[in-house]
Length: 236
Image (cartoon, rainbow, N blue to C red; front, side, top):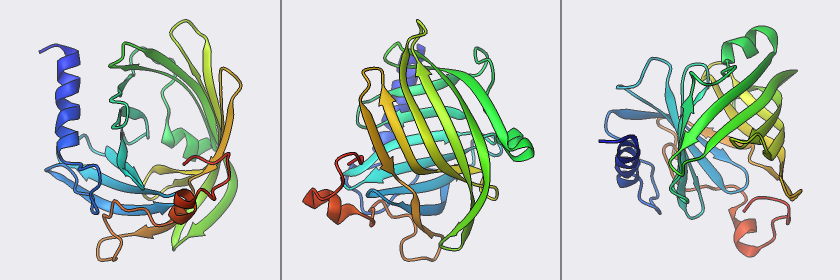
């Protein structure tokens, strides 16, 4: 089986366990959800681990008001191993061998800064390069009992010819305990100069036994989205 067929077989298996409008998130067989994060901007994220993966690997599934739309697989250093867009069908895989400087969560924690320069390939025959930096601000915050640290970032995306496609910058949150990044307020600009600003910061965390644990239904800011009251520059 060629690489493209393998990727589509993987994606098909993932889609089979993720109904588009499921009220609850059920991870693939052999996997277990450990935390659900309700995010602003009508988003919800389920973080899970799988027994068959390498130690330290984990996944996150994102859903909005219309269902699950994105899956991401990271390793213990928070490197993007693979990502799946259920809306577009795109499957992106990291090319660690071709990358100049893979991301390192350990480096970020040790020095407060991590520069990275890595390559991905997708099933649309695109090779993309990501160059950026994460920097701890020194500020800490506790959201719904979960301690987090603020991290500024700047990330640029380039095509195979070296043309800049987009830039993202802003703030994220990191959890040392769970070794993850969580979204915060950020801005996005594409090659045409079109800009967007949005904030998917976490609003609540649910763990096993909590009523909202493993839900695929977002709860925050969804009424504003549905009634069209969200600011025009926020992602809907």
